[in-house]
Image 1 (tube, helix red, strand yellow):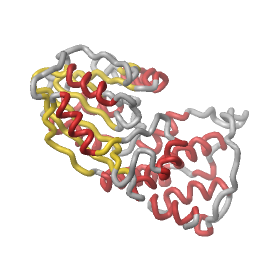
Image 2 (image 1 turned 135 degrees about the horizontal axis):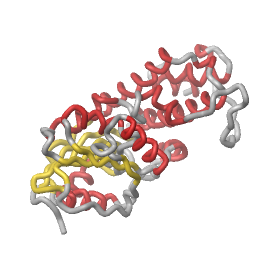
Image 3 (image 1 turned 45 degrees about the vertical axis):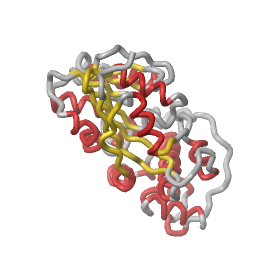
Image 4 (image 1 turned 180 degrees about the vertical axis):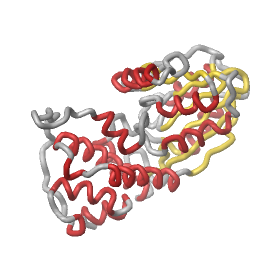
Length: 306
């Protein structure tokens, strides 16, 4: 299959293909494989270019305050089972720029501890919370999921998106989440799952080259076993691959309507190409049967583990 066909088949056609084609200056209907190019250093804006703000650029795809697909619909699907009310205390372990948690906080008048793996993104997210008047209700801080120690019995609910795939010691993290929950506390998350492959499947190599963190997916059965051993009752484990795929394509279609790519500075277009490549490989892994996207919802059976 040609490069053009792979992009067409895995990414909904015109969305990704046009983005790549416009960069190479060719008609997207006549796509051929792009030339191999060496990885370039970060490109500084020229005198007549607006400075590159990568996080602002990504928000043009996924929405203000968001760095992942799905926006408010995605986050509400995760917290809906919690029955959120103002008396609760929530923890977001994949805060990004905090847009998801600010929406939840504003909707339910609830305090949320928002945590993000990237220090740079966390700083920007906290500034956005302060600017929105939610600096105290939705503070955004950085953390390391491999070593985090959470306050015991502190939260009524914990949630996250693509929280564990890039974590080496998943068992430790899940037990730490369990320890942080109040009695009958709830945990909801969305993540990549191995479908018809082994962890070393060569079809994951392209994805590993563009992902920002390690690609270490588990099978659904491994998550259920680990959640159970940590003290959770896993109530929901459902395949959200098609739902998530549609939300990815919605984001890129939104970009195509919002931005005239031909007029974008080169540094901005290169940043978009990086994001396009990332999502092309993610969608390709889903469509090839290597990965699925699953939503889990679990309830603590005894509060916390010491």
